[in-house]
Image (cartoon, rainbow, N blue to C red; front, side, top):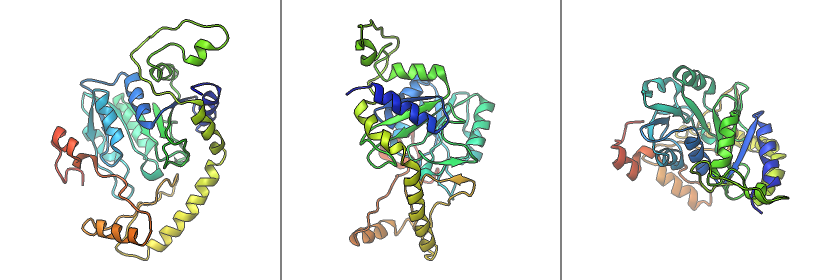
Length: 313
């Protein structure tokens, strides 16, 4: 019922999909990002570069780790972090970059990796939208310190709640296994299988392990991921062809050198008419919502960090 053989099988199969060495199942993307930041030693006095065009969990976990989020604006045509603006945001306090693969379109990981190597920074990919995506032949987790995924109810594969971290860093992997179970040296399955084994608490961790019920739900979906993505691609191609006819509607571009995970199909309309447009679509029984509100404009962030409208246009 808790973390055991099904979780381990999922972790192995999931990381293998990305040709990455290690996988760690967790209770959510949020906790996965928090323990990754903690395991990398990121905390008080540190800065982490990301964008305001993401879910609040990205910035929240940076703050909860004790660090400060530093926002960089996004590309107009994709909504992804504008890699050309990252270096201007780097200071002596910067420890990591968290790019968000928005809606399933990967960021320019080659350029982000180059910048990170130049400045000796960690890269943690927010891959909550991007299980099946790739760019320049590169998948999430292959150029970064770690990539973190969400299996929330709305995601491309789901177990209701859940997440995973993948990495090629063996030391980070071993620390993450401890961070997800209170910092203990052995899990319940390790302690009670066959002869009881003593355990120790090696660091101050959290309680955020994936369980075998969640893993059992995810394992069959792994085999269907690519076929599911292909079907979503067909649907999105229809949307794109039809929306091209409407001059007042735009949408993020799909880059030619990438495979889009197609987590969401998003349209952009005039901000002044957005809510009216949304309400009329809903009255026609078409399911729509504003996906993300820009983080720097939310009340807490506005007051805490003194962000102003127009700072990240």
